[in-house]
Image (tube, rainbow, N blue to C red; front, side, top):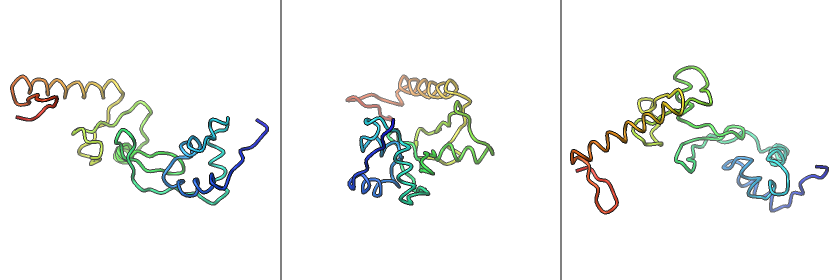
Length: 151
């Protein structure tokens, strides 16, 4: 594509106000840069040119509830990072970190379990569901008005 993206003052102000809290891809989508046929690299180059480098390590939560921070335009999920530090290596793309108590905000090492793949992770979820149904049969969990409750 022979042309370049035309930055407006409004675009630049949005970038300056949001670069610490959004990934370059999200900014590009918000500004309509992607729809115009450009990639996130347009935002990355402009951000670097403006001296906006070294993302914050402020902890955030994604739409699914997982905690992360941004480091150089990459999301670092805290539960994965904790397991990586524990085992002394990066996780593979197929390895999944399971939150034992189901609370995605509880990243204590005692609450994290490394699954070799999605199948092993799904097995754990199926186990807890099976146990919950057994507790329901025993009357230790009740269903009332569209909700489950401990008896």
